[in-house]
Image (cartoon, rainbow, N blue to C red; front, side, top):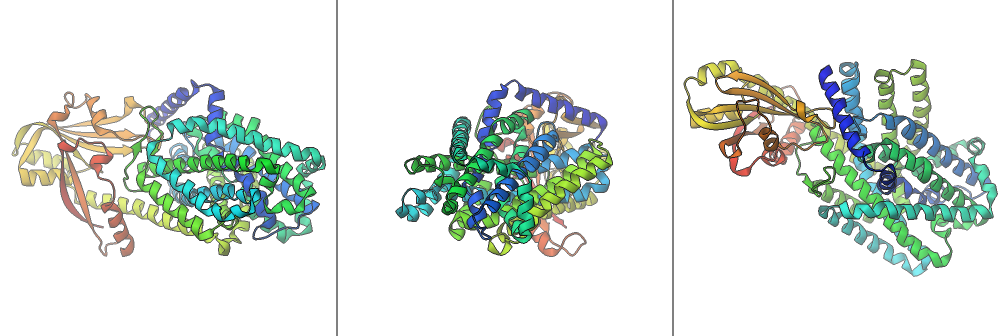
Length: 639
């Protein structure tokens, strides 16, 4: 990317951020509480319970209670507050966040892009693959853990937990196609009530055992580790559940901005969470048997049913945030060339970010329901939960290390300190979660491996296909000199969509061969998605007049934008006049891939890529081309 493109990207990002700044900071902070903090906000439902009665249970005594609460507090302070809120949130790609946005930012702004490019791309792909595993587990464990609170209301309600959870999840996924604009306005107020209830219950029990405040001293965590290092290491696999959802702070930055997310965390969410964890610790000091479900047993018996209802609403909101986050990541992956084209539907006429992806929605629903039926209860799912989260955190630390050195130009000692501290923390958590692989941790790893294979196969196959097309392409100058003077010219405009801005498109060759005519104006159009979220409208087009009525045009978009080729062509005046859709025909080339022994990919991956290409959404729908103005011509390519 040129210096002018980088400057344009920064200008576009500033404009995008300024648009969001017109809204009140308070309103954005409330929205962030409702969307961004749903996942981490529902962690108190199961985190403490899993530590003391999970797969590696601890004795419910003062040392372990204080040690666990201390670990939770300092994990929230170091991982969420210091790492994400104070450092990572500054790594915005023109207002957008997340692993793919971070990858694109480093590639665009770092002078070491070519040297470290392949390794960074692999890290970004792995983080994306792990994220998809997290998206499947979060709705299942959150909703199950909330509905399981019914067992604290009445013992006979146990048999209703699974049917109710399944019904809620099916309804949640079914309603995605309707859109969440109106429901989304309720998220913030509901979550504010939820966090206030968390804090209120916590204060009630802290008042009875104020000595639990000593657990904030990090020495209790040290004493816990010194007393039984192995048990403390295993406990980290459950303690990390208190920080699940930290990645959402960065991934959802584009929706709310850095300041609202930071203020909401420091001023409201963090205090509410810690007060509740301290209150659960105080409850366990008084009533060790409450470890079976400390969150719901904090409430008086008469208030447990309303608490179950409120917690269920909070988990639905947390699940909704994860699902819409999955849509955003899928959209980014498609635009960055890591996934085939897929149908994306807008559910709001005014908010571009509110999208619905049917294929992703139903695939997620099937996997979530399989998890619920397969694992049965939240405690079993907790064993599968931590690996995807800690793996993503570990990769983020590696990528941010490159960013702060190559882009922010931190001194080497500061970069080394950051990497040593946070790689050690993330490594301990990830290592502890690896011990849970036999108990369910295999699931997110399996999902990540499958997603990684699909993402890398599509990316590599697409590169091979483009290389083969370039090899077979005729130079455009030779074609124009030979064809433009001999072929019959007809009135109108022909737009030939081509993946590569080199040579003659296959569709143009086939059209001339079969129809033996050329339009008066021939546009060779390449759509290119850049590594910035939003591309400035004034710089979208690159135009080259090839003579004889031929024009080469490159139309550029950001990876958060949806291409609309006809709308953009109507506004372009660089090819000899305006584009009238009734006089314009779009020619597409539909490739049929033939797996071969040529160097490139293994045969099975070539066949997988060919299958993905056949099932990709057509370019006509993806680029919003008018259906009655499109002509498709087929061709075969060996890869």
